[in-house]
Length: 609
Image 1 (cartoon, rainbow, N blue to C red):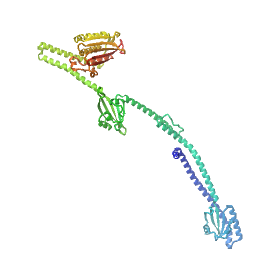
Image 2: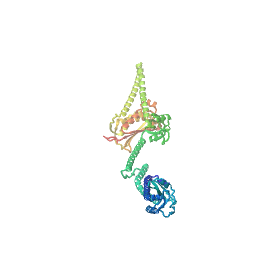
Image 3: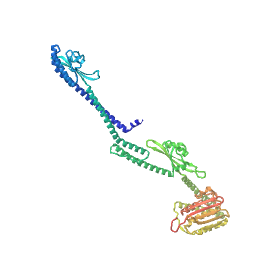
Image 4: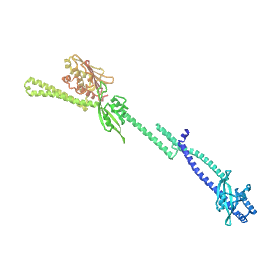
């Protein structure tokens, strides 16, 4: 298996390819060369034998012609033929036979075979030669497995065939020469292949080494490591590839870093958004949520669940969004038993991907609870103002009509009606005045006129202004100011209005014989704290959050009968806020109420600390 894996490498394939190409080329060249050389040697060998045969026919023609005329074997002719065949045989090493016109052997170059003299040579070549066919030759393999060349040439004298020259030459040396050349050629091929393989290893290494380095770098990049670089060893194609890959690695690193940075930015934006965000895939399953969405939906893990389950709505609007239609929903969710419901506006927007249609949906959750509360407060404010104005106007209209109908003739009745009209008019004036105050606060047109104020004197004056009402209800009022508290700079009229409102409320809701305590001191934080404590009927816990809302009354019927407009605490809060302070109220039903006003201490000619 390891051997097969080796041949799968580019280096082994290159070496094997080069070796195969060289082997095929050398084989083709060798086959052509050896074949050509063999043909050339055989042709040269055959030409030499033909030359000898032609020479011998010319030399033996007179003797054979004389023998043919005499009709018998002449001793002189025989000796001459023996001498010629012996001399030629010693030169070429071939067996030469001279035959007469009948095909009998007259002489032979091999004296070891004298028994064949006088015998008839029945070879087909001899028969052809006797028929005056000039080219008669063939290759044979004798009993000793030796390849031989046989040539038979007719001897012509006086225009007729007088004999045949028959030559048999061994081709053993020729084929041994060819075999030696083959062995030399094979050895040369093996040496060339070995050198080529060694050179191929070296040359293939110059190609595969950069490729291996490039492969290692690709693995490093795939694992997220971009600090390594491929060595550039030249300006060839591999060097250009290495340089291009290094450049691609740098760009990929920069792109991934930028993508990671953008991802972090997006994650930070999603995490810190005031709106909740849920993203889904094309099947409507939630894949991304942010912290705000988890808070609004009351769960920390919605991923993998459907958007309709997360929002608690029907699947129809989600399906329409996944089909490419934008829509919005209004959800009302209960956060806790003792808290108000949360109103969430959900905007559904499809995610479109180029050439792929809708790839998901985005649900943006916007908390509109405060907006809804403000809208509700606006509606209640308009309704309350209308109601507060309509009641005195209706009373005034009724008594004015009564006066017009003749009640003026009765002095006592007329004075009572005029008194009612006057009271209702004053009530309307107070309401309009309070609304104008609030309008100035809302438009931030109120200018504070700060003056140096002694808090002890200020609180004593407040108590003095309500001394008559305090005596009527036998309520005890006390003032306690820290001796170390220095005079402070504040808008005297504004704070007087705040304290008058707080003391007035305390008087209204404190039963006869109760107490009202006013105190002022400097807090550890360096702020001025003014506290009004009464032993009144108190305020229920459910009403404490809205006690400073405009026109809000705990007991609407009794508050209206007492002449209140429901704007006093709202105006007090706005005045305190204008000073840069805060007002808070704590109460318990049947025990009493504590109102705390905290103001920054301002030095002369400076801003609040």
